Length: 241
Length: 139
Image 1: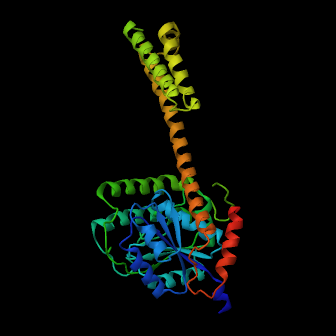
Image 2: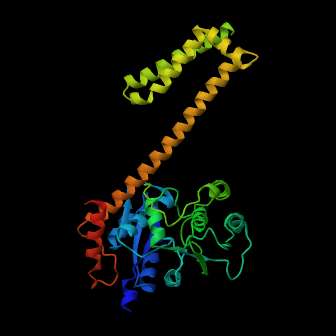
Image 3: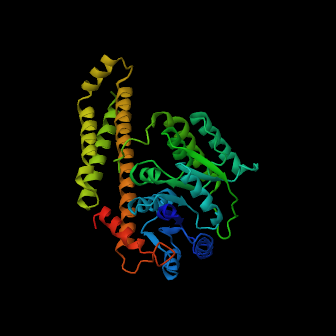
């Protein structure tokens, strides 16, 4: 028990214009996982997100300008690294992710995995246009690393301390599938566990046709082209940033 | 080289120079960023005034027309410049993100009444934790 108490995990919740969703999401998290620390990273929202967090007394890292999802998650990772956390989980503030899956993700980290992803496709595969992109990324990762990820675009991921260090200190480490693929190449042990996700309760997803195309191009080029040249090892020191 | 091309080169050189001199006068640009363009403008002027240099070089390198050589040279210079600008933008974005992130973390750590992280309030780990992180951030 003593051992378990000392294992500290931080739930990182990037939030961009989530005024409508943030309170129910956080309350749900607090109720389901009272044992976990969490912090919201407000990504320069133009709505009341930051004010609402302060009003409710939620711990908040308030970015003065919008950096995008990757920049927001990295902020949480830097904080986790500085504060000496053993693990960090990326958790959406829009209510898509369910807090009951947080502990299972962290348990797998304790079993010795470096990255644990929540997958929607481990049990049954949905066939839709949205999933087609995921499949293509899956295939690219399989071709370059030999590892099968059934849901590479899932945003519900847990990382252990040596991956947190990479996020905090190394360039081009973003919460995206190409990073997972890079990490596998660098010797990280990655595991997926089955999860269920909710539909968004309020607001619109940022995914539009043109952003999807850009995203796919970025992932394709990053995984298939740069991967081969980015080989690094998780055992080497980082001092890039 | 045709007289028209020479006139165009001189016009291009002068317009470039005037444009950047104006930006400096209006205090809208750092002088360091004009160096490339002033040299570029001088090069265009040099080519227009002494086209023999280009005709000679084009002959050695086997270009059919000196004009083609002029175009290729200009395109090559601009591409090099574009590469360096891309590199610079990437570095700037990295720096801005890093600054923003550290600012947000500092704000949280130095804020007196910041909400505690640990949900069970009897735990005192938050204080130790934040002093450790403050130390790491050099606060």
